[in-house]
Image 1 (spheres, rainbow, N blue to C red):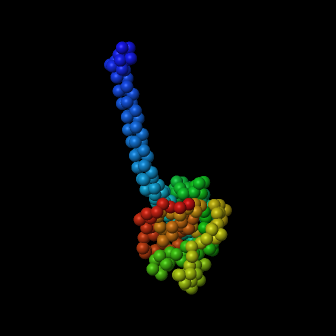
Image 2: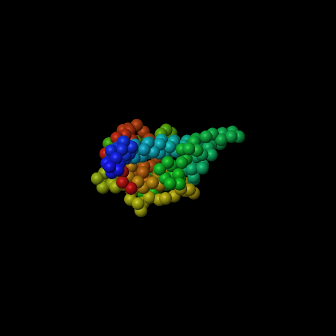
Image 3: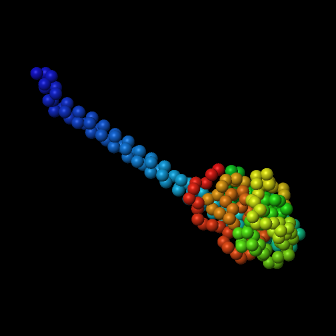
Length: 238
């Protein structure tokens, strides 16, 4: 009799029902979490590419600002000298008793490198010469001219003449790691590049590697757009 009452006791039946409902709820929760985790894994590569793309666009914007600041610096000194550090550009140019700003402090920071410092590109470096040839190839065989007055900037393009005029486009390679100088100060420079060696999402003058994008006031004439806005479908590799 006691055993029968225990099995038919409404309180016992309610407890079993509560435990059963709790178990089903836990299973449903685990299933929902699994579906959510799978969905997040599926969109993660796309999110990464979009975030990286925005960082690269910002790096290009800042790099172009640095290139314009270099142009103003060279023009101010009538081609007699180049800046020796990013600080030369941030400090500005003499204007009476004050300074004329030519570079925003934020643009002096490379958003792609760990320490935020731009690499300084010497006009005679192999990285610069090969970049110039890649620009020519990208521009359908024509190297865009320097901004006016050209004579102040063209003197720094002289090392490009031989490689641009004589190199076979099929033989021109991008600068390899041994030709990339990680110099961030105390050198006269005609352009800047990132310290990041990562393969890029965007293409800049047909180049898909951060360290090989050089921002310079030279050969800035009209021509095809430098940036390919279409991201690659594959995830960038380190």
